[in-house]
Structure formats: structure tokens, C-alpha cells
Length: 359
Image 1 (cartoon, rainbow, N blue to C red):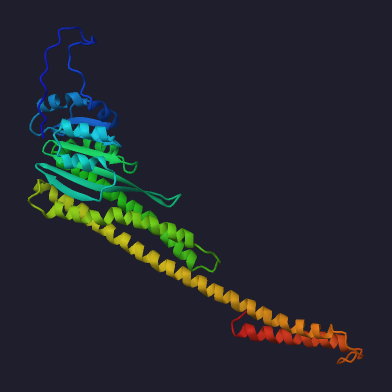
Image 2 (cartoon, helix red, strand yellow; image 1 turned 120 degrees about the horizontal axis):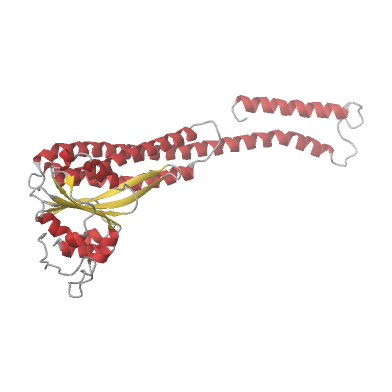
């Protein structure tokens, strides 16, 4: 990685006047500039100036001490922007190739003195019960941190502001930035997990309530969101474990306890999302069982009422025939007697069927 300044010649013309002989802006800089959310040089934990143009990055770094470093943030850069970034900082071709794609699994790689970490970001929309998944690529060098975000979740502007309010912490170097970003992503995982737990508890209460409902569609949608979140969280455990335990990686020993704390939180989140996944499986099975029980109960009730309805249907159907000689046809109390007998039989059947649980 080369951060040496490009040679510049003095400009004798008044300021604000274009120099026709000046070297043109590098073509790769324009798409990078459009994707840059912030670019700053830090020395002794303090920001040197405002947003640094990419063309002045090398010169600014030359003007600070050995503890100075550069932090560049990009959001949804085009492939041309990533390629231009790779050319400017001599990034490995594989790093550039992976950074251009927003569909990488969480992983950790080392290329010379650079660390390359891919992790998934997540944000939970409770109103729509949707987990928005993004991707974050971190490139860590001795004097360089590059964060490339794909998707909207977990903006890093507040992470930068928080670190800039703590110069003593930021003075420890780019490893602090690396830890702070990973820590923020994992902290948001916990918020997503809390939102999912709340919704799963609601679904579970609905399944086992006395109110007749069928939350199968909601369970299925939650199941999809949990699986998407699980794919973001669980694969990150292995890269972070390697980051903490592999002494060959260029990670300061002072940073390892903090990274280990992040790993502990991540493992807890991975176990939590696995538990939610198992719980949703159980809730889905219970819901299907409840539907089966309710269908059987409905069938019994229909059969019971049909059995009761058979009695008056049979009796009245018999008396509806045009026969001359029929039981009690000429008896004055024959009509009310048939009604009373029909009613008694129906009441008896209702009492019996209710006693055995069919009504």
C-alpha cells in the first residue's frame, strides 16, 4: 500500500485561476468522491481539518506524525469507485473484487499488512416485521481504515462523531476505529434480536389464546426474517474468533480484550437467534396442531348438529307422506304429541352429545 505524495509544482498564478498545464484529476477519483461519506486524517486522536479531498490524502498523511492515519467512509460505491480506490491505495486485486460485490459471506482475510473483514449489518423494522440486511466491508492497514457500506442499515456517522469526542481513545490508532465499527454492528444485532423476540412472543400468545385465529402467514414471514438474520450473525463468529485468537494477524494486543468482548456479545446473539428459530419451529408445529384440533372439533360439532337434525327430519318426513292410515292421525292430541316427542328426543341427543364433548 502506497500513500506517498504525488510531486507538485508551485503555482505562480493567482488563487482561483485554472492552470491549463496542471495534471488533470484522476478519472477514478470522480466516482470515488461521489461515494465518499467522509474522509479525514487524524493525528494524536484529533481530526486534521475537515473533509480531505482524495487528491490531498497522501500529502496530508505526510504532514502528520507516525501515529496519524486516514479514515475513509464510502456508501454504495460503484464498481468504478472501488476499482479507483484500489488503484489509489494499491489494494490487493482480491480485496477490490470482494469489495465491489454486496453479496459476500462474513469472512476475514489478510493481504500483506492489510486486514479485510466482511460483515452483515442488520436493522429491524418493527412496523413491518422486516429485518433489513446490508453489508459492510472493512479494510484495516497500519495507517488506513476504509469502511464500505452497501445498503442502508447501521450508518457510521455517529460512530465517527463518538470517537472524535474521545481523542485519547482515537489516538490509539486505526485499530480503535476497526473495533468501534464492529462493536456498533454487533450492538445493533442485539436490538434486532429484541424486536424479533417481542414479535415471536406475540405470535406464541396468539397461537395458544382462546381467540380463533390463524397466524400461519405471520409465523412464516417471521421465520423468513429470522433465517435472514441468522445468516448474517452466525457466520461472523468464525472470523471474529480468528481475529481474537490468531496472534499472526496484525492486531494490537491491547485491542484483543475489546474484540473478545465483542465476540462474546456476538456468540450470545448467535445463540439467541438460534433459540428464536427453534421456538418458531415449535410455534409453527403447535399452530398446525391447533388447526387440526379445531378442524376435528368443528367436524364433531357439525356431525352432532346433523344427528340432532335427523330426528325431526325423519319424523316430519314420515308424517308428510300421503297415507290414509298413520299412527295417531285421528287423535286430537296427535299433533302436539309428535312435537313433544320430537323435542324430547332432540334435547336428549343434545344433552348426551354435550356431555361427551361433541358440542
